[in-house]
Length: 179
Image 1 (cartoon, rainbow, N blue to C red):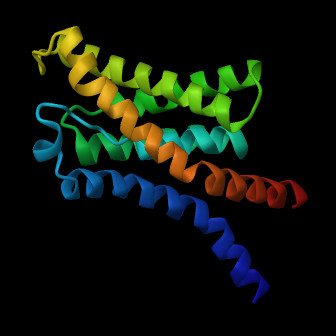
Image 2 (cartoon, rainbow, N blue to C red):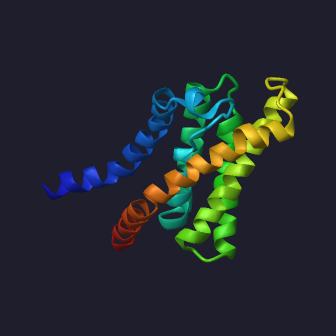
Image 3 (cartoon, rainbow, N blue to C red):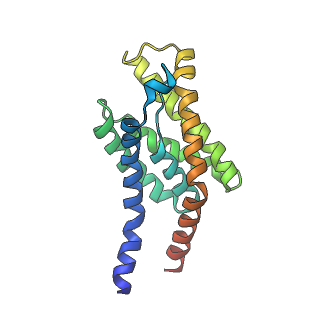
C-alpha cells in the first residue's frame, strides 16, 4: 500500500503538468474569443506558468527537463514550426531561475517574473514569426491585440492557481528532501 502511494505521488506532478498542457487547447476551443474580444488574440500559457512554479518552489532541473519535453510536445501539437518552443521554454525557465536567484522567492516576485518572462516568450515568438513572414502584425498591433490580452488572461490564471500550486510543490519538495 505504501509503495503504491509513493508511486502515485511520484507520477502526480508529471500528470498534473500534462493536464495543464492539454488545458490550454481546451481553453482555446471552449472560450468564445471572437464574440467577446473582437480582434484580440488571447493565448493561454498555463503550462509555462506551472513550469515557473516548479522552478521556483520545487526543482530547477525538473522544470528545465519538463520545459524541453513539453516544448517539444508543444511544437508538435500546436505549431507547424518545430523547435521554437523546444528552445524557448527552457530559455524562459532559465531566465526565471536566474531572476529568482537574485530576487526573493515569494508569490509576488514570481508573479512579476512570470509576467516578464511571458512577455519575453511572446515577443520572441512574434519576432520569429515576423522573420519567417508568418505574421503581418506591426509591433503595436502585436502589443495591443496579442500581448496585453494574453498577459491579462495569464495573470488571472496565476491568481487562481498560485496558493494551491505553491503549497503542493513545497510539500512535494519537502518529501523529496526527506527521502
